[in-house]
Length: 500
Picture 1: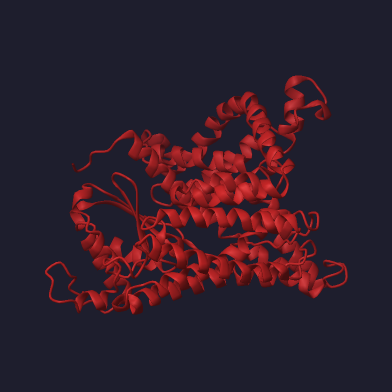
Picture 2: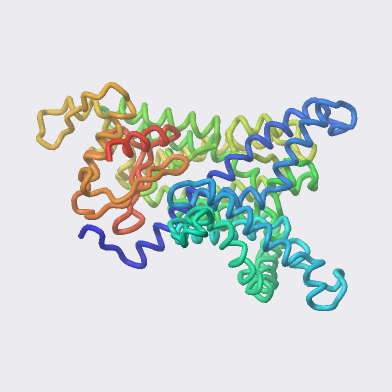
């Protein structure tokens, strides 16, 4: 089994890595949100015209938003590279600059012998298009992974290895630009048509987007969907337009606003229902897990720890959650209650939204959130016992490490590690549950999940992994395991890598 893989597995692993790599450029957005939020708070009327400090902060925040496409190109090239090298990031920069220069409206007008005004509109927006940044970043990473070990003759040795990649990328991007010259107008036109279809549906379109967004979370493909509505892929650009205060009040932010009631209130309501329906002997362990995940969702908008706690144990509940998210998006868009975020729909971004010039009655989202807290609680509280769903505290495998070791002496219970560090202990137990070092191919992580490729899935002991106190386990592919650790995932991943 060792070393064996399939095309499907390789493709899924690539998508996994891409989803993780998206987090690097996205992680820059909170800086823009904070800078702009403070700037708007200082000068809510003039947006910098009346106060020098506000002007500096707002311009600094816009500096990030204005170059998002470039940030994505560099971030994805770095994140998708096999050894996270700066040379890969530089290749992403070179790749992006070559493409947007060769395919600018002025350049295309010169090639075709027309005026820039007559050039297809797709070329007029290519410079700031996040999708172009994504494509060039991915290609640059692929070039780095293939050519970073190349050996040239001695007289060209200086350009060997990593130094060769930006040079190779600059030539490859000429060919890529030629392909995009014909393909980009078609692709852009199709994306615009889809975006306009959703836009023309108004509030209903926002609801459909919210429903689809949650359904795609397990696969990581929600990033592709988000790029259409959140960034300047087809001109919607919901997040940058909101953060920069350049949108339309009550409209800009509609593809973000409805998430606040769900992430801050709805999911914590579901967590309370899961706690109240947990078995008595497991209530303490389930309560600890659910309380931590609820606070994370409320404060930061990171919901994966909560969602993965029932996503695969009770998929019906997850479909209900996706439907309720769509309804929340529809309600917020219908009443034009808007708020936005630089990271996710938690309390921090809500506070920053309050002074945003295009936010519209954002406090009503908090009122809506109270309603959704009750709605989630009632629905989850009714469905879990009625259908005997195995949510945290009702599944015997969902135990804390301490309770598992205090069981009746069952041979399958976990022996606690003697390591002093909590991250080392957790990594040790997860590693044992995955079948040991010999069964691990690669270990990586994203915002909250460990992403692990294994050789033999039959060696995986889910009970052992859950006994480490994780929030959930997903098996999106035959040799792929995702372990939802929470926001401390980076520390656990690094400890696992040391053990390997």
